[in-house]
Length: 379
Image (tube, rainbow, N blue to C red):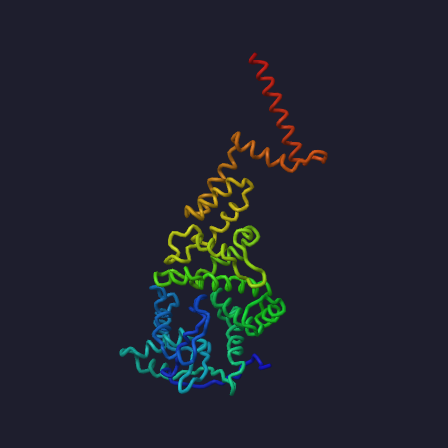
């Protein structure tokens, strides 16, 4: 088995020979799981657009980085990691810094001192094996070790994608199936718990599945589709609220996939097939909490009404549950009989009654005595 520790070599290269990686985990979406080939990496326009204008925003702060380098000069505190492809070097780590450097060098009014600093920079080359066997595994391992700790953490989605890729490499099968022994190996390698490995893959698999659903995939042309930034809203239901919503959103414990009904329910609640999820009933992770309370409602009729208001009427769970919570705090005759029924339901003839049943029967007896007394006085 090829060692996961790559061979590294410090070299100095012209900045113009550095090529940005369009397989950068920062912005790969769950619906585009396949890696681009080496032949495709020289098409840099899409990569630059993603790094500088993702959704119309400079979310990777390239402009801040450019201004910082102009003001303070180039300080290579952390290495840029590359691998050689023909006469160029593919940037595997440090794409933001390289893009900032290349952007500055295209400007005409920078100082000669700064231009001299940036035209050639020191990088760390990851040496490819002669037959390329195990090279991708080595890159996955290196970036995983760097980004799952405190050094330079990736976003949760990027971490999840890296863990999933490593899992599939170790599984050595085309189809995913959960294997706790592989999770144990990954957890030791990355110094994270096995539960983190499992949870990351659970969320990634569902993001990938929903993103590839035809009605979500087709919505991408209009601004819909699965985005890496939706990780938290899916994590909340699959990981933090799994116990409460498990009968409503069902995830297979071997494949980590949802059934078709659950996929449709997720889209009705979260609007993945709509632009920026506008108008979604569950528009933020915190909305899963009141929705889980709705699903835990003991009154089946009330529960069905509330679920319909959210899933079909597109009302926020927090609003729907707030109304129900107010009802539960207000004791009306309807509510009183509802509570009485709940207390007496477990009672069975011939068995010792529960404490709640005894208290309820006692209270009923007192009320009947008061009603009888009131009727006698009236006569």
